[in-house]
Image (cartoon, rainbow, N blue to C red):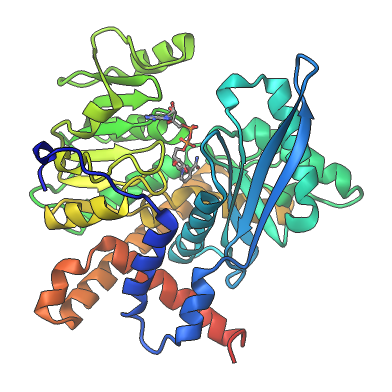
Length: 439
Ligand code: NAD
């Protein structure tokens, strides 16, 4: 389908997308019982809470929050808390499910979880956000805990939010060592060195390994690669810097207000300073302003969505002019767009692999907290790199194995997302059986 054929629409249902892709992958996992397939499709627990908060002007507003624990098979739940006006309970379910597979691929002993509050953080003061966080965590009560479900930062939450999460939980559980209840904390409160940049660093390592393995057509290093990044936050901004250090040229970046382009390469220090001073990348000197829709269609080697979900859809997928899409964000490609990308031979490094570095270092933080220790940055980075290389190898080996094993007409349907899911499902299924959860 060409974009000029007229506007196409798509009902975007990420929960269904994950289920469909899960079914596809599960078909390649030997001896997976039908009941087990159903068990993995439905979250173990989903909780929605509704609570009042006093605003700065004295008024009272009600907020809805969610926390979903998809699976406890590999260990306690692990997943971020995001604040966003369009957050829905279903979206939290699909994000929690993604976390289960991500934890399995990067080999950390956690199950998947996710949570968030339906709110517009940009329209709230810091004090209001603090009160919302405290009340949300009170409402969750013992549904979170160091050995049950461990939150972390996600969109529009950060180390300050995690400090409030810790403090609220700690007040409810005095006399206990509670630091391991949440990761992504400030360093002084038991946060880990390297956590802030971990997702970006993991993403970089995944891309490097992918290229090293000869999976990127016509390219054997990042040097000179032309890169477009949508989203200039915790993940996108750090990744831009790391990629640039590796010799790539970042030609465009964007945030919620729009994007900036310079075909000869963006001056990242100038973009960062402009965003810090003015709130957006838009207007950075020596750049041309472009929209977030246009950024998707820029000709480049690597397109990196690092902001919201569902930004590459059926109505804009034909504009994509990249050889590789790296899903730094969770769920940036919609189901129908995913199919079109596959048909157009555009490779997708899937979210459950590409952005798994964050949960890997969250795990390191949890281990440090439980052992009352703090590791040097070199050790953390080394362990992160090892985990990412191993994860990419597992997925690429699985891709090769699946393509070798299936009939020729099935080969085009086997992509990295399917291979990654197959690796994850095999692992979680194996542990489910070992634990005797399934008779
Ligand atoms: P963040 O809040 O720090 O940054 C988000 C960025 O996206 C901001 O620059 C914001 O302006 C931009 N943005 C928002 N709406 C946009 C839009 N419509 N178009 C373009 N840009 C837009 O969040 P983050 O922590 O960098 O997370 C980004 C993505 O990465 C999310 O999908 C998150 O789930 C995923 N992720 C984050 C981590 C982590 O460790 N932070 C780990 C795994 C996955």
